[in-house]
Length: 252
Image (cartoon, rainbow, N blue to C red):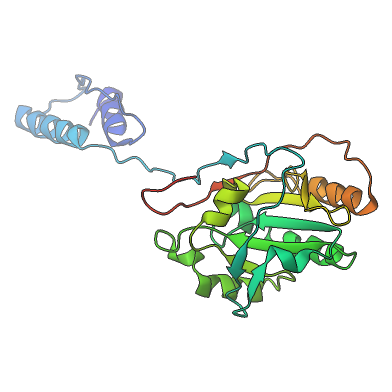
């Protein structure tokens, strides 16, 4: 019979969570063959020497949007829409009183968390006269799942009511000073003046696995204000998401 001391040693050696387990000299209540003891001790020591494998969790890198100056003028762009093949420019939105430019992508968990609600909210406000465009600037070389073919599939799957454009050179992202996905730029337009930045902040407080419901509160309030000509009184919290995936050897 093996005593409680030996049983404890066996349990410690077999327990992967016990990284500091030591072999304790056992006490015996009945005679025990010394050869058996040596064999058992050798086995335990061998088991203790086996390295414990640790499970690594890979998490998406979080990045906050950098504060762009309000009044910043919307940069010109000329980008293709993979779904239709049409090339869109900033000039095509000149007749709109406000323009929402969103930097998104296919694979980012922060974008996936919002896709359905982005489609729903933009559809609602486009009916009220808001211009909307989404841009993916992620490198299709390092992240092929964000390439044009899959962008077209995403646009169709989520029934995006806005054009979803591909910034292959990433020059448009640099011109907007965009750094993450999702990132929201809401511009207002007064008459013949160029589009000027009115809001650069988050969609709402919800994040993946945060247990906070998605409401689109912050962005919706900003759109309500810009369309009605009112001043935005809430603080503009930065958007949080994945970093834009720049081409190898390049960055923002």
